[in-house]
Image 1: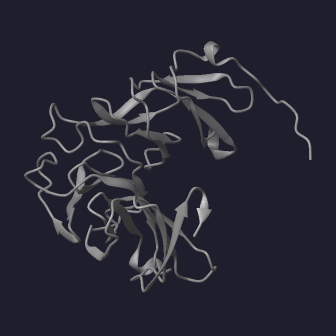
Image 2: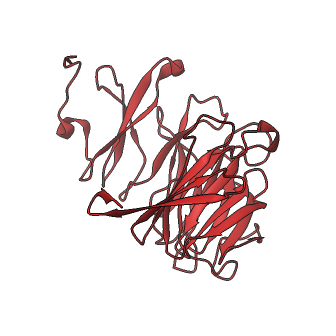
Length: 278
């Protein structure tokens, strides 16, 4: 099978992007096809995938990192959530550059989002209104659900040493609220295969635990220790049944597979040494 060149464009012609360039597919006009976002260390642009023409420059500053396309029901086509390590984290309309709302990262390291490594959020319904919301893992073990349309806090829980507890939502996430450690990318799935119970949210932590909570409330589902910092949790279905599985990457060089993930009952440990499965 051969391929043919459809379109090409010099990166320098697009704009000031800096280094570490990445491409990400996003919904195109009316959802008929995909378009592209290209972003680097200095900026980001929204491109027409058909001819690579520039649809718009995104109002994102230095440190562009974890950007995800979302649709929070604002009838604006689609939005992107910039979860980068800048001064704010923002919901942006790519076609116009409009900033819908922002979250402050604080002014010093007393704020959970200040200086913490940005992670990918989960995009789920977090309050039962059938619209998508954004769940972010913080630097102190705090997991917060933000309303997709407004950025307001829906719920916040503290994840620490295998414990899940609700904490105050009126102020910023601080160390006083939660004494946990940095959380990984956040993922979501219906672990029990039943829409009756809604989606679940899973996240790993540097404290060595994986946490699963109910998306619409933050209520604990289960927690599981791995005795080493957890870097990533992925939701999969490896056997096409009505229950999902989880893949867990751990800093001790192992990857774990959790079967029957509500709650997990068996674990398979695959140790990776020099790219060889042991």
